[in-house]
Image (cartoon, rainbow, N blue to C red; front, side, top):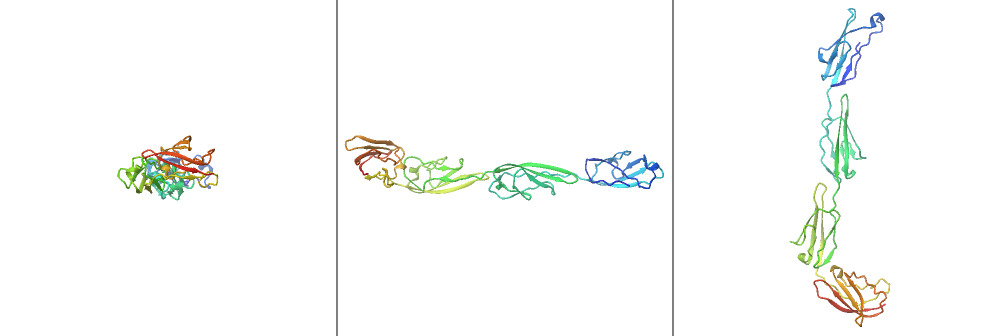
Length: 316
């Protein structure tokens, strides 16, 4: 009786064998020999005496065996040869980490998907919300014939076009540079010639009014944001009294809107003309520590404007 075999993959080899019936006398069973042949695939039998078989033809291959002993009956069998499988994975484009599931496909179905990332495979789809990075995805067909392929899937980080600008700003000679979380974007605005390629705002060119700034980060995972900022034609407001007594009310010498004019200089004198305090780029933070109550005089120099002069009363 022919010993049945598991199906073979095309291109593999095996040895054909048989089992003699139990009732055959030992004298006939010992050393029983014969010839293996195949009418379907003569070239599959590479050694007719030993039964060496080469699976080089897909399909069902009929096997014949004839004993050398004239009193022994021949027998037949079959060997199933399976075709090659192809696990080649179809190309996957770069993905955005905020994107949707990306279906994974291959040349042939029926295989199993795996990856080196946790929870990034949902069935036969890749979930880019796993986060930015490079991941290895594998596909294996494990049948009679076996094949495996793997690819790298690149997930691109989500761009952030957040722009940091104040709600309003005073009209000034100095340019204003917005802050951004993600550099390299493109700037546009609702004014002509008021915005440089790197986003610097020419406030004088923009003029008084509401300025709309749009920042766009292009690409697969791009983003865009539009912010509105009001440009106000404000002047520095002077002060006539302040009381640095620690009650957190009027504790600092504050000139309203002064912070919109960089490059300023504040000089304070007492009634006899002695210098009491001088500060470039004054930040509205003088508390007159160690200075007695009384009347004091100031000169506030602002680039592009006439000097502001006046007096204030210091009250403890």
